Amino acid sequence: MDRDALNALCWAAGITTAYGDREVPEETKRALLAALGVSVDLPPEKAGLPRYDTDPAGAGACPLPDWMRETPTWGLFCQLYELRSARSWGIGDYADLAGLARIAGAAGADFIGINPVHALFLAAPDRASPFTPSNRRFLNPLYIAMDDLPADTRADAAKLAAVQAAELVDYETVAEIKRKGLRAVFARKPFDGNRWAESDFDAFRAAGGVALERHALFEALSQAMVAKGHDAGWPDWPEAYRDPESPAVARFARAQAKAVTFQVWIQWIAARQLGAACEAGRNAGMRIGLYLDLAVGEAPDGSATWSDNHFALKGVAVGAPPDVFSQGGQNWALSALSPTALARAGYAPFRELIAAQLEFAGALRIDHAMALRQLFLIPEGAPASAGTHVAYPLAEMLGVVTEEAEKYDAVVIGEDLGWVPDGFRDVLQAANVMAYRILYFEQDWGLFSRAATYPEKALACVSTHDLPTLAGWWSGDDIALRERFGLIDAEKAASDVARRIDERVAMVNAFVDGGQLPAGADDGAEDVLPARVLMAAYRFLASTPSALVGVRLADLVGPGEQTNVPGTTDEHPNWRRRSVVTVDEIAEVPAFRAVTAAMREMRPKG
Image (tube, helix red, strand yellow):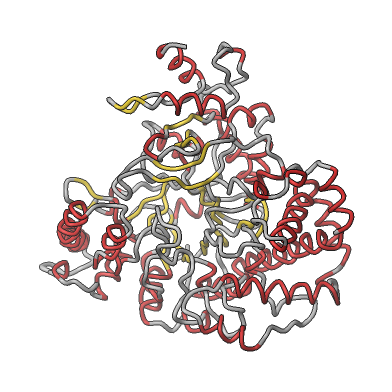
């Protein structure tokens, strides 16, 4: 097939073939066509491709409550694992979340946002990134509160003391003692009293259907395989166990029925506890409640791809093109849903995925919302720079989101950072999907955008989990980290440092112009973040017309170091840092009291 014919086939399949004067490698084009199930010998009209030309204006709109249009509001967001308390076992848990929800509600917040709580790999707890889940439809049992179970349980005193005192989450030890404690309760009193009725468990299991059973079976198999020296992920298992419908898997399920039921049981416990945290927020006066986060994909060797491999693209990974944060691009090592398979299934798997989040959420943040329109996909074995964008049927994908949001009466936020296709943000705004506006990025020609220019249908915040706290940004810690880990070279780092000094001055000038700092303030020259600049930043965001403002808990109480450095795995303690104060102490921290008071003053409840 010649170049023109190959490109024509790619265009029909939604594959971008060039970026300016850079032609996408032919190997990439062929690999992506194969992943989509498109043969170079088959005309495009015979390939079963979805339509990409449907008008997204017909996708409907997500709920936007009248009260939110009239009285813009605010909330907190944090990493759940970073919460610390005297009663939790070395990691924040669902009961800590309920406690924080009560504190946030009392402070006047209308929502509390957390990292994705998708199921990870319980048999490989060191795989800790919440954005590389094993299965997005189910929950992470490491967040189970061990003192809220049908029966009491104990942990090894020395190990428990060590994980409680640790600066970083020790995932392996936390998983060890929690698994042991959960198994002890399950063996003795899995149902004890009306709160833990066996009939409720049976109803939960029945409602979960095949998807829940297969996830539980995967987890039981994963534990067994790790015990035999295999990886937790299924590609490393003996071939007979790689297919959930194989005779070997059926024999395992029969022989280990109790182990499978245990995995269903811990999902039930997690769901009940997360539901209780949601209820605690509503009871504390939060009008939105929990704001959950949907990761953009799943681990290629996890529960989701094992349970049903018909819907995942094979031989490609999700990533990002080269940009200011990573000059060589990024490979996120995530599996993506196949647009062709989704279209054939009437988008049912995507609908079930969205519904699984909204069962507990008053708001949903869709990470990398551009996935509704396209994903940057990289062939297996190729560098990230060799990848390209592949289209998804936007109208149909967005229609699923709006329909499910309407069903659950939930607000939806679309994380629309990075390279955004022309017109995409307008489509989201028309569908009432809130934009995401980061203070650091809202600048042009060396000036920070003034508050009045922020969109109304947006969540405005200082930063996210992939960015430094305001103190870290101010001191340039993020630039130093990117250079240390080889994500940018020394020349780029020096340029970024010089620019950051100018950015600090420009930020202060924006706050002076907005009335958040006094005229003539020269705080931008200082290397350590002045406390009044932190206050000014949040007063600035509160003065925007954006319907939602997110206050990052780490800005107020720590941890001060960066949560995650994109493009790294083990080089940096990603997803491990813990708060230096307990949940019970948060409300008395001066920065918390000052910032939340400012939010109540500037965004009072109607």
